[in-house]
Length: 319
Ligand SMILES: NC(=O)c1ccc[n+]([C@@H]2O[C@H](COP(=O)([O-])OP(=O)(O)OC[C@H]3O[C@@H](n4cnc5c(N)ncnc54)[C@H](O)[C@@H]3O)[C@@H](O)[C@H]2O)c1
Image: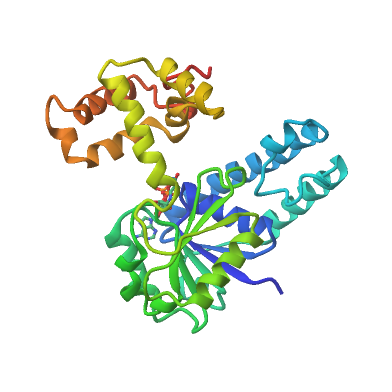
């Protein structure tokens, strides 16, 4: 029998995580808090599973294309070099079967957690909500269950004591569009036991992710520790009138051979997220500062509905 994984939270990331687990053969249960949550999560399960299968179908056209190795859905196809149209068709069939058979939704927390090998908490970035759920889970979890959080900005040491199993608790941080951007940052807190850390590294690889191991706690993990200052610097050049988004992107791309510049990346991340990050900085509230100017410009674009790729327009037009 396949191992049971429980995903707590059926939002954007929780849904994608649950689907990738089911795709790779895990018996997957979403624990949701209410009937209303089911109504919001089911359409996401449908939408993301269709996107995954559509990307697999598109990958067939990439077989033999020298660019294919850069474009295939890395979380869904383990070995691109040996992939054929027939092997991808088999993956599509197996994926459909797993999505249909291995995904369950449960409101009863006790039932949901029973027998779980791993619980992945992917609820809103709200410390109180996370603590509330850890407190509710702690006496219901099986002795051996490992518990991870997908939190982007909160450190596992903030929550370890509430889980009742600090040695089996750590962060496993995924990226949006998990089936293509298959990074899994693994980060323990000082009380995480090595053997559970290693087990989570193994698990991440088993669901098509590339485990990226952090040796200590770091706010923002590896990626955002680099990306956030990089994007802030680019926005500063724009907000201070030094140059325009197209030229800033072009500079970066020509000089580093990167496929995208910072403003293209901002369009993908979404301008609301960029604005929220900006507003968390105290300087963004001080008139005249670069952060203040960035916040003002981002807000203008958001108010016009130009929030990025998902909206069809951000810094670039995708319509
Ligand atoms: N969105 C991203 O790009 C992204 C990327 C990596 C990690 N994350 C992290 O993943 C987590 C979830 O983010 P998301 O974007 O999926 O958020 P979301 O807002 O789409 O979903 C949050 C989910 O949490 C549930 N929830 C909130 N409070 C709850 C409670 N008290 N009890 C039970 N369920 C509750 C909501 O019903 C919803 O299903 C966050 O910790 C975030 O930092 C997000």
